[in-house]
Image 1 (spheres, rainbow, N blue to C red):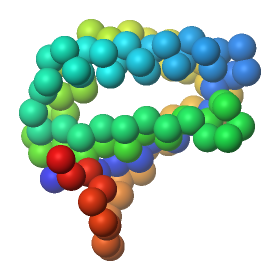
Image 2: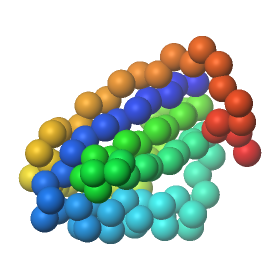
Image 3: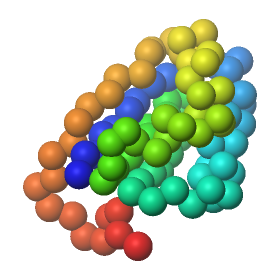
Length: 100
């Protein structure tokens, strides 16, 4: 099992578009219902910083095959002031996080 956090900050004029692209990823996830992934996205108080949390049981991660995720990644560099930073997470403890 792999857990990662991705954090980035978009340009002020790109925040709405970024949210649209993220919502499209979730629409496709709900449509396809791939197994082996738990995924959440959050927008921080500044309205520009996004944090994605993912837990995958399979390799490659199911996100990589989604059309909407490919569209999301296609323009990420142009949308960002601070580029995505991927951090692998190592759990110390949790309570009902990433459980069905």
